[in-house]
Length: 356
Image 1 (cartoon, helix red, strand yellow):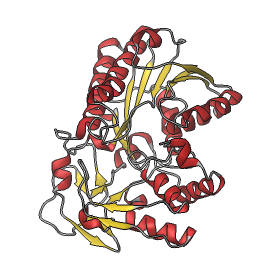
Image 2 (cartoon, rainbow, N blue to C red; image 1 turned 60 degrees about the vertical axis):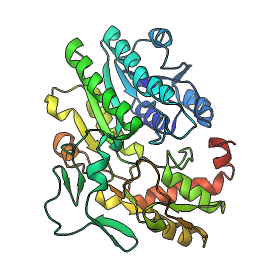
Image 3 (spheres, rainbow, N blue to C red; image 1 turned 90 degrees about the horizontal axis):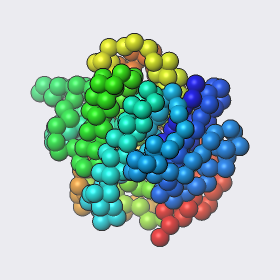
Image 4 (cartoon, helix red, strand yellow; image 1 turned 180 degrees about the horizontal axis):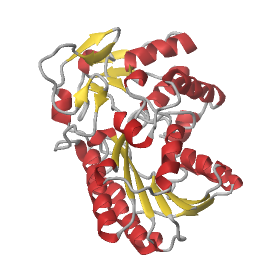
């Protein structure tokens, strides 16, 4: 099968590309190399047989010139929840990249009758009800308070399911991804091509570009290894905020199933994929892991809140198991150790991916 991957030289795009090439698919992809470090993935992918094209998904003419494919996997995005408000990226740039770019890819799919898989995010879920969840700190991490008065719909100790609210506010970043989801589903229904929306938890692994706002597990481990300054921001400065963890190679089995374009119900086309509660950890727990692996390093408590911060986000992937028979395969400890080994071997990784 001919597969086109947007953002093929990013961490997720390159990981997915390698898996699909190994499975015998014909893989092409494009990248604009906006993300520092992404250019380092080009030559290794080409050696494996991928066709890598320089193109920017914001420009329709460049998308129209891409080779025909049977399926598009959209792994390109500005993935920072602070994008558009942090002074580094304008709100217009964010919308152009994450939403206008999706429209251009959907027009490509319309022209070629290609299927479309959108790698979306947990940040499409509503901030207000997330921030209001009853949590308590136990063993250095927030957890849902047991036996609290009825939880809001779509949440349990297993995490947020697909029924959890997606109403605003969800951040500008989250809004671009949620709008992309809606447009993708409408294009698929209107023009007759398959669409799948994969809402992912925090993706992490060796080779991820280390920025605090885009890959916290990778950034924290690399910064700890290099004795860089680190802070616990918000929530009293204790580092109790919790996220789940998923290696993108664990998506490969379900992507291969989706590429077969089975006839599934429309309600089953939007699915969470996450390491789930078993993978979840706080920054404090991540620091404890780093201290065991690399030795002690101080972390400064700073209770200053940041926009869109949430104490606890864990996705429930029960629907992925029901619909696709999918479960995460890589435990968090293995993901962290993989990142640590890479950090040992690449002392300049933070400078490569975050030059300043």
